[in-house]
Amino acid sequence: MERVWWKEAVGYQVYPRSFQDSNGDGIGDLQGMISRLDYLKDLGIDFIWICPMYKSPKDDNGYDISDYQDILEEFGTMEDFDELLREVHKRGMKLIIDLVLNHTSDEHPWFLESRSSIESPKRDWYIWRDPKNGEEPNNWESIFGGSAWEYDEETGQYYMHLFSRKQPDLNWENEEVREVLYDTVNWWLDKGIDGFRIDAISHIKKRSGLPDLPNPKKEKYVSSFDMHMNQEGIHEFLQEFKDKTYGNYDVMTVGEANGVSADEAHLWVGEEGKMDMVFQFEHLDLWDQDADQKLDVLALKDALTRWQKGLEGDGWNALFIENHDKARSVSTWGNDGKYWRESATSLGTMYFFMQGTPFIYQGQEIGMTNFKFPSIEDFDDVAAKNTYQNMIEEGYTHNEVMDVLWSTSRDNSRTPMQWSQDKNAGFTSATPWMKVNPNHDTINVESQQHEQNSILHYYKTMIQLKKQYDLFTYGTYDLVNADDEKVYAYTRTLGRKKAFVIANLTESEAEFQSPMSVSHGSLVLSNYNGDQDPSDTELKLYPYEARVYIFS
Ligand code: TEU
Ligand code: CA
Image 1: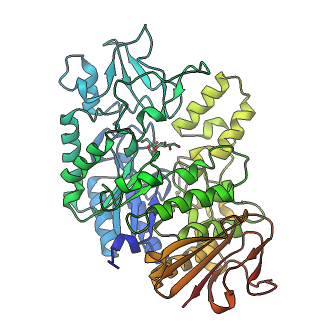
Image 2: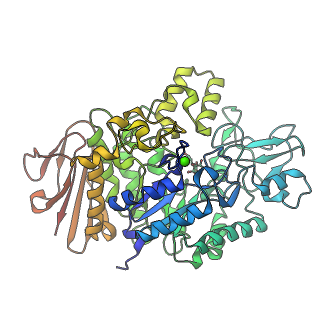
Image 3: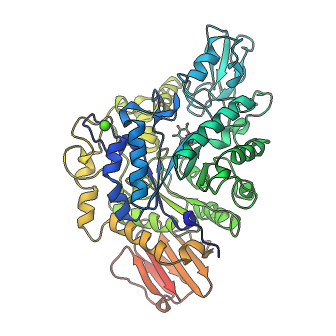
């Protein structure tokens, strides 16, 4: 067993705009983050992934970068960043930054130059095409809705944007583009950062010829993932990228690899892989399908087990149930009312002890919930605004669209961090840039620090257990009772030691036939006080009950 630091580590994702404001302008910033590092250290965090903090017009909250080597003014300066890095290191933690290389902002000097004329030497740095019959070059839909093309009056051509129209896609086919990106990446590596979360990296290669999609339903634009996600030829780009940048440094990398399946994961991670781990999307996609649909436990087990077994012995999973692109897990998959504490801890238990590196998204550790923003004006996300506009145009009513946004919008997870029950949850002394969830009077860090039974303490214990037992890092994963529709249970085995993880993911009681006598193990974690098992193999689980046993 070769020990690797990032396999043993627990990561924490910070969305800087909503984490902590330090100077009373209502916007989270780097100094604010520094002031909360002790909290993260105390929680047991080993590395922090900070979402984009670069200079940006903020059309997509920083994922539209206008200068890769500068810091967004509202967040602070490069000195603040250097201080953050030092302070993180001083506490024995590490810092990874978000690399957004699929696109830039339309205000990036490269794009301004590219846009200036068809003859510009940087024209080919982005993806420009002539109109087709006076319209868009093809029928691809943008990931954020509408066409994936924007017309430029001045030069009479369209440019491609898979995300917002203010996020033109870079042309990775152009060698100059790749080289300048590598230089930028190396510049950050030389600064001493500890790695990258690599944004939207499965989208850098587009289907050659940019063909129209079949359009049987006669839609205006057609969902185009098949044309720009994980396309043939992408691995040449990824290999070169690695060889010319982080491959030469001792850092960790996690790629956002939407569309990559478990059978081909070995091309991304592991021996022949290009990254240490990937965020896969199969389990998250389950909750996009229908907002009101209950969690399909069997489908969840199927997806996650495929990844656990697929990477076994070669490769590594990034484990997560939340990020800044999804609604809150306790509201989506759990029950944020009656079983708020139980479902938050049960969901936590379910993913945290699998093989891989667990990531915690800010606020997840205190069970932050979705928020019903009173008005459409309260939404900030460009994707939410586009959805609103497009659905209204398609004939949905205002209330229907609000329902969709309340349950699925990315803004649900972007409300300010709830530190205390004070005004604005202790996030800022000013008016916050985005509404604070009013439930901060009950859901907040401070009160959970004082309460032994809290979600926060539960997360702390999970982190301690992960560190105390190598089993949770290096042990083999095996699903138990695959056909159980309520309970997600699995074992982790390392030598003669075994862990048994059980999570009822429903709001009803569950009878569970255990293949092992639980009385032979020791219960190291549970979210209920007593138990009501008829015998030590016939378990009776409370709603959302979770338990972890160790057998040695
Ligand atoms: O997300 C990438 C992204 O949106 C797709 O990979 C994915 O297909 C989509 O989420 C489907 O649900 C990243 C960032 O995480 C996100 O915040 C940015 O908006 C986006 O890239 C553009 O940079
Ligand atoms: Ca601020």
